[in-house]
Image 1 (cartoon, rainbow, N blue to C red):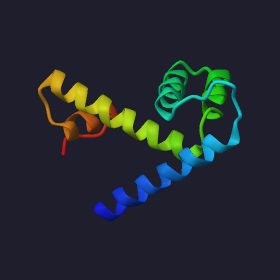
Image 2 (image 1 turned 45 degrees about the horizontal axis):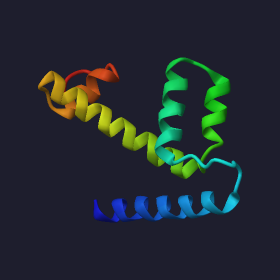
Image 3 (image 1 turned 90 degrees about the horizontal axis):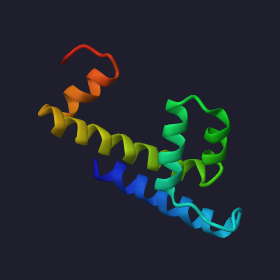
Length: 98
């Protein structure tokens, strides 16, 4: 587990360094802004906003941000429902209870 975490962190740091050096935007977006915009655009099926948000950061950084958003959302729902994160995640995906 620690190896996977270390690998993800290293990829994230590299992605942030790459993003900082490209200078694509006059205003730089952080990966959490990009993830929030990307996920909300996907939920609304807005391809223009999806493409825009995907261009704000590197694909690796966006992936990290979307994963972090998913984890936080599942934890928040689990607390709200007084259920385990595993139960909530499976329910959101339409999977049978484990």
